[in-house]
Length: 345
Image 1 (cartoon, rainbow, N blue to C red):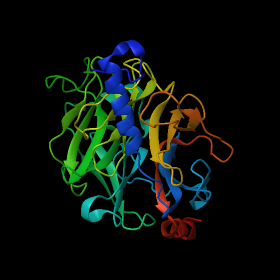
Image 2: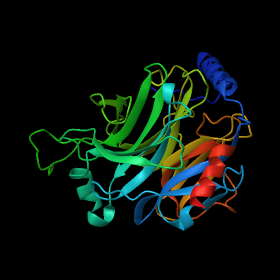
Image 3: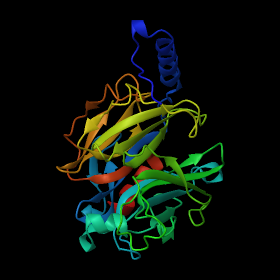
């Protein structure tokens, strides 16, 4: 069930609820962090399914330069030998500040086609890890779904303070157990999740978002407070080819609402939303949207609240590289910024 969060004089109790939720989200927005002085982006580049790093030009959240002279930082040696949708995962709990992971889709579309990749695609996710964001080790391909799944796409992860583990999530569709060759009609695509402490062993996956008959892919979740209660999540409606946002003030498994109502969207003809907080402006969020039929990612920025499907405006693209594809951006401090520059140029 969705609530339209736009206040109206005639909506009575609903207006009151909307105002309360809007106020809660607005006041919960995290403060700017003066210890952060730049941004690290991880992307793939269209026909090149590898992990490429981009470093911000100073503390500008929408101006980036390629590291490693534009060559990939990671080229998979397992599975399809291609990785898409790289997501940087911040360490949580005892690993906060000393461990990070990258997870990604095991897919090299040059070796298959879009139909086959959803029927008999990989059931695993790529993982790399690091203790400094500079040197990445221990490439592994970990199976997370069983043989009834057609694919595992766009994995991401977030530390769940309520569970004390990482919640890993991805998109999958499923075939009947009797349809071992996956030649029949599948289910809709839904978001699945599992928990892990080490990105090596995972709990039995369960369904997190199922909006049947709509296909949902490319989920990303951004915390909007430091208490583990307020989140905004962005996802792609693969059926209508739109990206929209939902908000929860009661945790990752609380009540999620869609600001503006069930038809509200941020943008059409896009996918792969990647959201990150501004280092200098409190409560401001940057959102990259992948114009997959055009020149890839374009940057947007939030209005008065990031917990909305309205108010997003296009950012300057003067310093933003063209043709970056679905990935992620992580705010970083000066120590990491300098180390990345020294190691990867």
